[in-house]
Length: 128
Ligand SMILES: Nc1nc2c([nH]c(=O)n2[C@H]2C[C@H](O)[C@@H](COP(=O)(O)OP(=O)(O)OP(=O)(O)O)O2)c(=O)[nH]1
Image 1: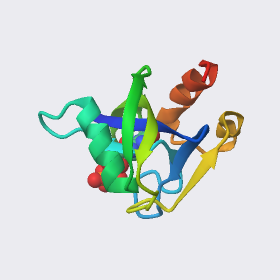
Image 2: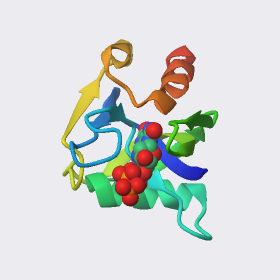
Image 3: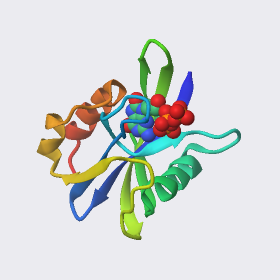
Image 4: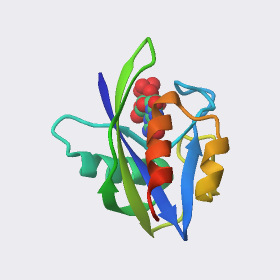
């Protein structure tokens, strides 16, 4: 099982979502940006590092949501979600095809990576 941290990043009351590129696994699916934990790396360090690497911004982590464990068949993932806020920097995509800043209700309309669906649902139930 691979451990992947991801971040629901709030920027001026909108939620940042990113689209995987054609070349990545799960091509063109929407996700919360993030990536795999490295050896001996904390979940928080991982998500801050991945967000800086992938979308060029610095975040402050606010809280953790429930992990989502999902079996894609050829690999199994433990997806570790955090809510975070944007602190510094402009969005520059290093790997993703696209991004959107959406209202909460708009999150339901995306073609999500399957593992993200329970996270989207938990997030939508929160007061924010
Ligand atoms: N970053 C991120 N990955 C997710 C989410 N949901 C989901 O199923 N995944 C999957 C897609 C990837 O297989 C894995 C994250 O790995 P990654 O983005 O660091 O690496 P990758 O698969 O693109 O690259 P690689 O395995 O080919 O080296 O987790 C999500 O919300 N965010």
